[in-house]
Each structure stands twice: as C-alpha cells, then as structure tokens.
Amino acid sequence: MEKSVRHYSIPVFVPHEGCPNTCLFCNQRKISGKARFDPDSVREEIDTCLSTIPSGSDVQIAFFGGSFTAIERELMLYLLGISDGYVERGLVDSVRLSTRPDAVGEEILDILSCHHVKDVELGIQSTDDTVLLKNARGHNAETAISAMKRVVDHGFRLTGQMMTGMYSASAESEIQTARTIVECGAVSTRIYPTVVFRDTGLEALCESGEFKPLSLEESVERTLAVYRVFKEAGVKVLRIGLCSTDGVRGEDSVSVYDEAMGERVLSRDKRDELEKRLSEIPFEKGDTVLISVPSREISVSVGFQRENKLYLENKYGIRLKIKGV
Ligand code: SF4
Image 1: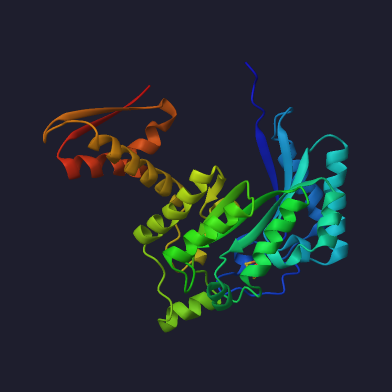
Image 2: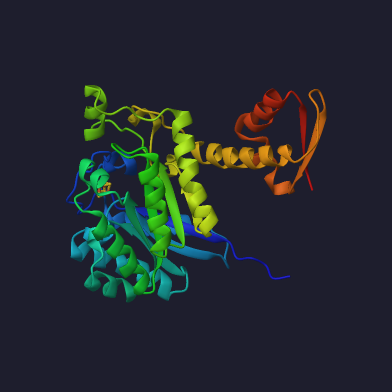
C-alpha cells in the first residue's frame, strides 16, 4: 500500500505590509500578533520550523497575514528569493501566499510563476457588492471574480477565503459567495466567521448599535450553510474560524471568538446526518438505539462536548449509542 506523504506548512506572517486598506473588520496587527515585521528574522523562523518537520514530508512556505502581492515590490522579491533558496536546496517543495483580489494582476502572477508559488489564497470575503462596500474592502465583486479566474488560468491552485456574519451580509449572500468561489475553480477554502476586534471600524459600529454580531448559534448555522456548499462541490475546507495559530488572542476580540468553531460546525453537520438516519430506523421512546459510524467519525458524531448525542437523546427520548466500525 502506498504511504501518504504528510503535508506541512511553514507560516511566515507579513502583517499589513503594503495593504492600502483598513477593512471594517480588520486590525491585521492584532491578527498577526506582531506590531512590526522583521524581514531579517524570516530565515530563522523557517529554519526553526523546518527542524521539527520529518524528512520526506511535503513542505510549503506560506506567506500569510497581509496582502503579500501588495507589499513593497523589493520586499516581496526579497521574501520570494528566500523561499526560492529553500525550494532549490530541496528543503521545501513549494510556496503559498495569501493576498487581496485587487493585487493579482497579470504581471504579478507572471512573477509568482517564476518563484515556485503553487497556491494562491484570495481573501474574497464576499461577492456581494453592498457587503464589500459597507465593509470598506476597496474593490467590488467583479474584481474578486476576475481575480479568482485569473489565478486559476495562470495554473495556480486557488483557495478562496470567505467570511460569514459580516456587516450587512445575509445568509443568502453568503451562500451565493460560496457558490461563486466554487464556480471560479477554487480547490479549497477557508471560512472565517466574523470576529469583532478592538480598534476596528466594526467595533465602533457595535458600540453605536449599528452592527450586532451573530450569536454563537447563529454563527454556527450560517457557517454550516456555506460549509455544505463547499462540501457538496468537493472543495476542501482547510479551516473554519480563526485560531491562536493565526496569532489571534481572545482578549483582542469584543464578540464571540470561539477556537472550536470548526469542531462545532462539523459536528452540527454530522448531527443532521445522524438525525436523518434515525428517521429511517423504527424505534420507540425509551429504546436504546445503536448507530454505527466509521471509527474516525466517532468524535464528530458524538458531537462537540457530546452535544449531538445529548440533543438527539433529549429530542427523541432514547438512549443513543454511537459505535465505530
Ligand atoms: S485587505 Fe486584508 S490586510 Fe488589508 S485591511 Fe483588509 S483584511 Fe486587513
């Protein structure tokens, strides 16, 4: 049997460098957890990470955190030169980066093609013009859509990042955004439920009462709806929700910030599947009902903090046993 190669990502955070925007929800310095970026420390950061990665792995250097292709050209080329060195010495396989949709013109993509970049992540967030405008994204949906197509046409693997619960967004606009990302050829996605950070325009809107963040339950439901669009289309969901490895600290947020958002969404998805299966099994109140699931799915089936099991037991008055096979 062929052994699968493990994938490792070496994140290099390039916070807010070159980003001309101040999106309503963003305080990139908080998200990156760094006030300043020191290019001279990048090699050391990469070396430290590399020393923990088993040989024979598939390794990527990932420039995250800001708008990589919008940073000062000299710095961008300097950083790509560093990653080139690792790839050319056989220590790293490829490079991925995240950036804004309005910073991936033909010329930039041609440059990336020459520097071992395989994956381009675009912060799409929404493809609804009103949502983009009200969140001060600085571009419209047309720009986001043409950027996604251009990235794919250049032969890069596209990851389309989107948000749920943005100011002025609706469940419908979020589902449409997910569908558009799928249609534009994304192979993967990251879904970020909105978190209100201190020192952002969104915090001011919260204080004035203009914006009310989603409750945890609403956020799980809205995120689940877009998760299902991607799942049904075979688009890999790389991440749901920010977490501490993004440099985020709970104390910087003034709304629901839940590191377990991904677990909650996946377990809610599973709960609905289990409920459907229950509807096909004859049972009476008080019965013990046994449901078999693949062993690797036991945890997600039982649910985050056993919530699926408790929910179904209470709703149907049964004792539910979930067995791995
Ligand atoms: S474009 Fe990205 S980095 Fe710049 S302000 Fe908006 S979210 Fe933050």
